[in-house]
Image (cartoon, rainbow, N blue to C red; front, side):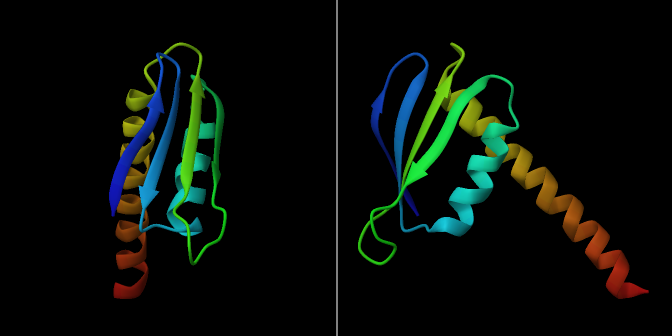
Length: 92
């Protein structure tokens, strides 16, 4: 995976996420939309096999890099929680 900031202002960012697909982008978009500081979170992928997704984030004035970091950390917490519950379920 490689990230490239295409453009950024104080409250908006276009971020190209090279080598990823809908799986990660849908989770990230969902986590961003759960954040009250985020006004818009969406992504565009022209064609899944020939283009990389571009994530667009617009905030209420908060640095969009901060909200993307926070969303990624929230996904990590959710995955860790799932792994803990799953491990308990399969060890029974």
